[in-house]
Amino acid sequence: MTAAALPPSGAVTVRAPAKINLHLGVGAARADGYHPLSTVYQAVGLYDDVTVTEAEEWSVELVRADDDVPLDGENIAIRAGRLLVEHHGLDLAASISIDKGIPVAGGMAGGSADAAATLVALDRLWDLRTPDDDMLALAGRLGSDVPFALLGGTALGTGRGELVEPVVDRTECWWVVVLSDTGLSTPAVYGHFDTVVPDAAAEPPLPAALLAALELGDVPGLGAALDNDLWAPARALRPDLVAIEADLRSMDPAGLLLSGSGPTLLMLYDNVDAARRALADVTDLGLRASIAPGPVAGVHLVTYGPA
Ligand code: C5P
Image 1 (tube, rainbow, N blue to C red):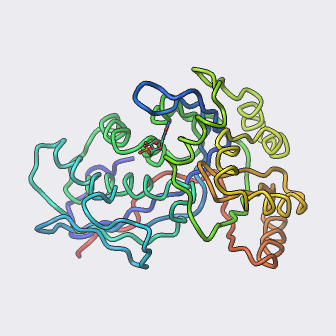
Image 2: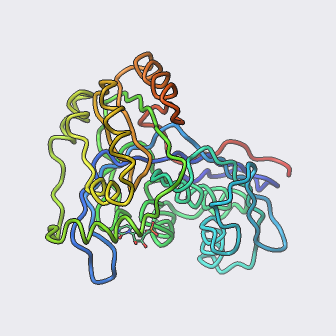
């Protein structure tokens, strides 16, 4: 996770993957407002690249502008930087530049990926050598799915999603990632879950069939076991998704899934050629889409060197 024994340098770039939830079991809201989860994360091959350089003050910029991302102190990458510095009792700041390849507000944890990448990039920039357990704890304070972005691969997530544990995944998945022109707010979808599912369990059960399919490398079995409890509230907030789902199902994927809190939809294939054919069909419908393999590695160093 953290690169050790390299000399401090002027600029560091770290790459972080998007995540999807192969299973997203949601329980009744806790006293703190969060929902207990039983989820299986998979990191997939869409990436944000985060570059940090030391500076007088904290700042963040996007390489490709996107109006939906806040660029003030509320930006999760700046919060990550401040938290790491505070953890080490230091008084340092950095400029953070983000090249986004992960859809914004799409249910693929792009902001969480940026936070995880910033932690790792600054740790390297200043040669802080933060222990992995401390990095995971800091990540958990930043957001429920930030720890998973550090880990990557495939992992079981419990608690509010921040407690992560790798699981065996022998599948080779090819996802057709179908984007939406407008995003969905994660708190809004969780909030609506309480209305749509008023009798949710206190502790959502573990997805035994899905975990078995992963261990066997059984993509059709995985496709049949994909499940997301946020799908019903997301559909209620975005009824336009229903017709799109019907179109996508007619393309015969091994499975169809809402990504996280949506509105991104995911079609599963067991080989890249079938995924490419589906991508062409989806594009013909006038939808924006791309292909991503999974599972892939978590945050990793891309370059370090003079600014
Ligand atoms: O933890 P994070 O900041 O990513 O969560 C964003 C929002 O999503 C929370 O404020 C909450 O509304 C909702 N959430 C939830 N239960 C979870 C994770 C997120 O209700 N387990």
